[in-house]
Length: 360
Image (cartoon, rainbow, N blue to C red; front, top):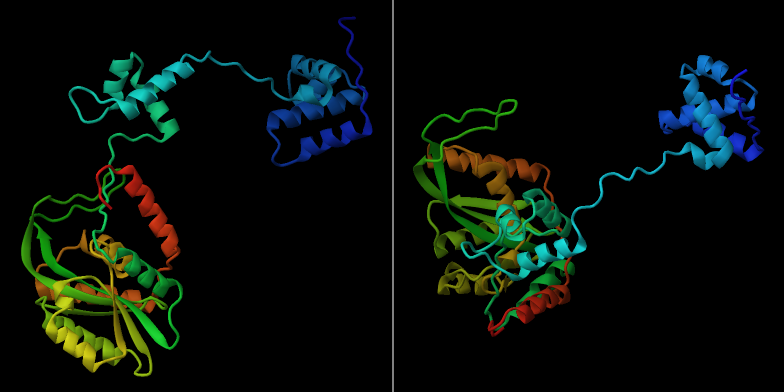
C-alpha cells in the first residue's frame, strides 16, 4: 500500500561519519536530525516509525531518506540559497570610488554619503556600504608636521638607538614638562552615568589657577620621577635635575631625552651640566616630541585623570596629580619602542615624495 520506501544501505565509512555528525556537540541540530533519520532508515524502519521515534514529520523522514539515497552524504547539507539578484554592478562601484577619490562637490570640501548618492543616482545605503568595503572616510582628516631640523636624521638615529640599545651602566630617562595644567571645576554638578545615558557635564567651567608638571620616565622600568612647580623657568628645571641626581644611584650615567625648549638650553643649565658630567642630554628634533616616550605617559595622565577631573584649587590639583603618579609607580608599565631609525626615515621619505613643494 502507498509509495514504496527507498532502501538505505550504508558503507562502514558512511556509518561512522553519520554517527560522528549525529553526536558531535558542534553539529547543527538540523544536520544531526538528518543523520539520525538516515541511520534509522538503514535499520529497516519505515518513515512512519522514524517519525514517531525522532518526533518529526513523516514527510521529513521521507525527504531525507530520498535525498541520501540520491546524493549520499552531500545530500544532507543545505543547498545554497540564491537570494536577491545583485543590483549594484562593478561599474557602479567604480563610479563611486572615482568620484570619492578624484572629484569634489560644488558646495563642500568633501562628499557625504547623501550628497554622493544624489550625484550618482544610488541610495545612501549603497554608497555607505561601498565606502565601508574600501575603508573610505572622507569626513576624517589626519594631520602631520615635518621637522625642518637640519640634524633631523642624526637626532632620530641617536634617540632611537638609545631606546633599542641602551648603554651599559646607565639609566635612560625621557623627560619633559606639562606646563599650565589648569585646576578646573564645572559650573554645575556632573550628572552620573546611568543605564542608556552617558555621564553629563556642562561645557563651561571655572578656573582656579595652574601648575606645571616635570616628569622623567625611566625607559627600562617605567618608573616616573616627578615634581610640580608653580612656575616654568630654567630655575625650576635645574631644581628638577637635582631631584633626578638624588634619585638615580651615583654610579650610573644618566642619559636624558629632552625637547628643544628654551629652558633646557640656558647658560645656567649648561653650567649645571658641566658640573655634573654623568648627565648627557639627547635633544629631539624640532616638532618631533613624538620621539619622547614621556609624551605617551602625559597622554595617559590627561585622558585617564585630568580631562574629566574637577579641582577647586591648585593645591587640590597638585595633590590629585601626586596621587595618580604614586598609583602609577606602584605598578609601572614601561613603553617598548619597536620601530628602527631606518623604518621611521623610510616612512617619512614616502610622505615627502607624495607632497609637492615640501622642499624636504
